[in-house]
Length: 223
Image (cartoon, rainbow, N blue to C red; front, side, top):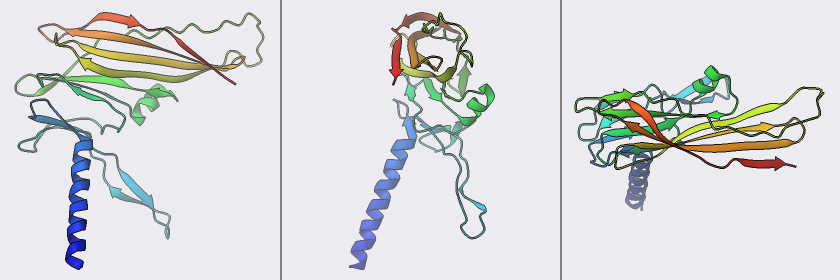
């Protein structure tokens, strides 16, 4: 009975490790590289002393060579589960978005903010490509003709999320930017709008905006 239990435990452990690898690594189409998302530090409070005990240290994300396992490029921080990663078909371009606690601290925003980062494989290393400033979706808020609200206009920032959607055959990158806020001045009304932008790259990998598709604004009134 004991050998059978050991086999079952080993099988379950192998499956868990395989699933963990699939969940945290994004291989390039040519299978040469992979983006490892890394992990944030974890810990727990000791019930006896109340001290914080570190269970695992912070591990930054990285682009790795799958054959050797060597780190080709270490990223500043880990990525999160909700971050989106996309490779171009030729495996030379990598785009991903990321939201970190440090972003909110720097901007002072209480909502969700994400940004897109792009890297290019030049044959020797991955180089970061500077992206153009994306147009901010314009929101048409309800106007209040009656002045004199006791606290002035109460606007709450909800989100400013930039997400990579896909690489085109032309080499251009399609991204979306969703901007949203809630107006609590009279009644609670949430506004959001998405701009879908196509970013092109010239022969020297200078990025520029090719096209902007402005989608219709969404309005949600909270009762």
